[in-house]
Each structure stands twice: as structure tokens, then as C-alpha cells.
Image 1 (cartoon, rainbow, N blue to C red):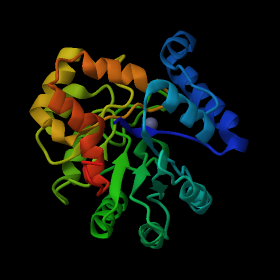
Image 2 (image 1 turned 90 degrees about the vertical axis):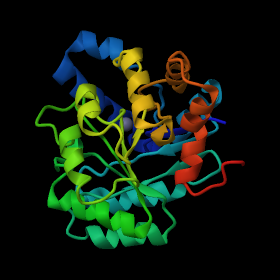
Image 3 (image 1 turned 45 degrees about the horizontal axis):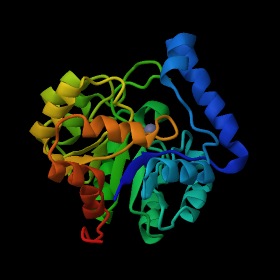
Image 4 (image 1 turned 180 degrees about the vertical axis):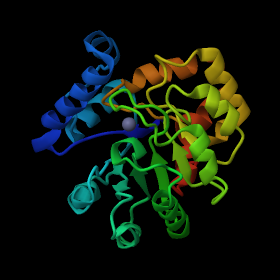
Length: 277
Ligand SMILES: [Zn+2]
């Protein structure tokens, strides 16, 4: 079984516009050449597009991660996310740290059966160790919601960096972090700092959008030192083909048991499902 814990989809009518805006950001920050060689977008970036890519790359289930960049978008996005709930694809919800209604939003998501939320400190311009983010993270812990969040740099957004490994470590003084998932192996393009501040803590990490950027030796060392029981397979589809992510992970020299943990067992455990399924 293969579970992809990090994917993005958009409703049909805004998918192309949303992808174009994200690509424009990457072009602005990194230049044309970088954008062309590092951002392979699988279109359409919709639920149908995702299901198609999953079938081609052998993914059985995907977790979709929506992001509200303004508090006013929250309810519309969560209503859409609620519809994405099938055997193959499941969506987390979203909340904006600056939303005065954040607590009601989280309680509502928990009541509606969501398994977790996605925060994007960079897009939402909210430091992961700010009081606004920490109160959300602690409330999610109480409600049994997972908190997935973008960590490290972002190729399409300028500094400051809102969720560095050091800032994430500050959060771990307020909560044990076992319900938190730091995307991009703890901090995109900040992996030395991940080793310094986060490896060995209870926090979970995913493998999204790392295979072109992180040296295999360092990746293997990080997974072994952190614990393969806290690593989740994630591709960041449509920005990456899950088959490429899997090929990279298989090339690292992990044991079959470690690969099973990463590719589906850990996901089933944190979703509260039976690992023998
Ligand atoms: Zn992502």
C-alpha cells in the first residue's frame, strides 16, 4: 500500500488560475530557468487530475492539504474540503492564524470529522511560534486534530522565514509535538538546522518535494536518527510525481520494514486506522 500524505488540489473553476499564480511566484523568486527545471506541474491540479496521477504512480490514498491565505476564505475552502472524502482521497481542513474565529473553526472541523488541518506559515505570514499559531496547535492537540504545516523556505515566497526548524523547536516547549507534521523533512532547504533542532523529537515529518534537493546520504541519516516511525511518505503532488519520490526513498538503503512504515504504516497509525488493513 502507498499513502501520499502531502498533495494539493483546487476546485475545477480556479485550478488553472491558482497554479498560474503559484508559478508566477516561483518565477519571481527564482527566475525562469529554475522554474522550468524544478517545477513540473501535473495538470489539471484538480481532484480528477490527482486521481489520475495516483493511478499512474501506484498511490492508493492521498491526503489533500488546502490553505486559506485570508481568514475570509476559510469556510468556502473547508466546505470544498469536506466533499473530498473517499477511499482514495481525503482532505484536511484549513484555518488562518489571524482569524478571530479560529477556535470555532477548529471545533467545527473536529465535529465534521476532519482528521487534521494544514497551516502554511509562509503564505499566511504567521510565525509558527507566534501566540496565534501556538494556540491553534494546542487546541488541535485537545481536539485530536493533526497539524500539518509547511516548514523551511518556500521557493515561491520571499523571506522572512516563518517556520524555521529553530522556531518549530520553540513550539515543542509548549506541546510534545506528536500531532504535528513538519513538511519537507522538517524544513525545506534547511536540513542542517533540522538535524540540529528537530531530529529525535516526537514531531512527524513528511518527504514532500525533497528528492531533487536533499543529498541521499543526509536524507538516510536524518530518517535513521529521527526514527522511521515518524516519517510520512508525501510527494507535494502536483509539484512532484509520487513515483519519483518513491524511487528516491527506495534508493536510500532503508530496510523493507522502514519503507513500510514510511509509505503507509505510520499514516494509518496517525489517522487512527488499522495497520493490517
Ligand atoms: Zn505542499
